[in-house]
Amino acid sequence: MGDQTRHPGRGQAALAARDEALPPLPSRADLQRLTANLPELWHAPTTSQKDRKRLLRTLICDVTLLPETHHDQLRIGIRWQTGAADEVSVARPLPPGPAKRTPPPAVEVIKRLGPTMPNHDLVDHLNAAGLRTGHGRPFDITAVQWVRHAHKIPSPDPYAAGELSVAEAARRLGCSTGVVYYWLKTGQLDARRSPGNRLCIAWNLDTEDACRRRIAQSGHLQPAARRGKPGKTTDRTNNVSALGVPNTMETANTAR
Image (cartoon, rainbow, N blue to C red):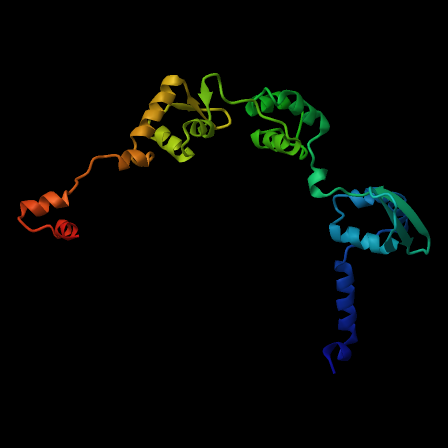
């Protein structure tokens, strides 16, 4: 037999000590006050997520999603523990992407100013106007670039008068972009970086002529120049005669 069976007084004392250690139960008046104001109980800082789940299980028996003809709405059937039933309609939650869409006022500003204003100026303009991203944060370059991409808003032309892109320079010269990048790297062409980090090559007729001369003189870029270089030739007939060796080809032709 256990110790508590032989000494029932000790078991009762242990139970009493355990009950005393538990937090006191709320009074009936406190329970009535709490049930009359469930939002206060739900949002109280002392109410944990576990307590909220228990509260829902205490009140609700089950929840059913009902058919709905409108795709942007949800119909929810709620059956309470008391046996009563309710039906509510709510807006269907948006997917994460659309839910975080940039607010329309900010999009309209970017659409209006984007084609002529660079991104860093747009960032300053949007933030000065108090506009925010879909996440509620201030705008930065990445956020503006995303709006441009999502709404197909063109960027201002980064090239000033007398400037070309690497691709356009290569197209005009009929060479690869790798050749143009090599000339830029070795200082044979001048270029600047635009605010969007694009290379803008200073271009005029003299620059184009110089590039074409490089291509014409390059054995790598112009194989014809390499093939046209004079090389050593051997006159077989003269060499054979100089050595005093009979030319068997001429002898054969004479015999014929």
